[in-house]
Length: 183
Image 1 (cartoon, one colour):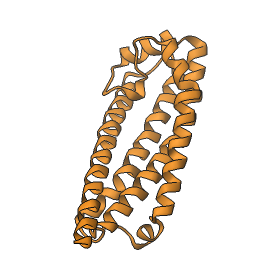
Image 2 (image 1 turned 120 degrees about the vertical axis):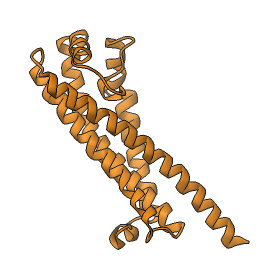
Image 3 (image 1 turned 90 degrees about the vertical axis):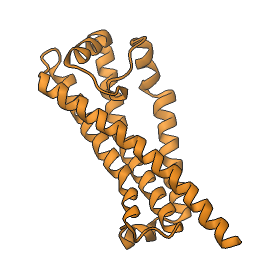
Image 4 (image 1 turned 180 degrees about the vertical axis):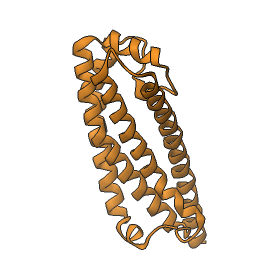
């Protein structure tokens, strides 16, 4: 069930503004920010926060390949990505609240989907925090910390994919509902 306050905020206009802010900031971060340069510095290696799990050895190798300047750049990226996580969580939750409300499901158990992006955003914030801690500890990273970060990353990615699926279902539900009203 979605709280009334969220359904009131989740108007078409607020959803569009939130999505534009998120997409705009993401475009800058991933096209012009440190992200492309990190890819050049680590050819063939995905960023840790994009992997479906990794080991302590993977972390050590990735940070070593980055070198000192790359680790500084990764730190900048992770700090900027904190903002991206917040924008993603807000935009996704507003969009799902909007779609759920327009489909008439906001007072059902299905309304809980509006909170999936908030969960993904929270996990992203935790993940970035853990990665920042490991960057500060390198080369003496605790294996347990790498394990916790890896688990957080995996759960974040699955939660994010669940959120995308919920948006797709919500768009179909909204279209079906809208078509039914016109008939």
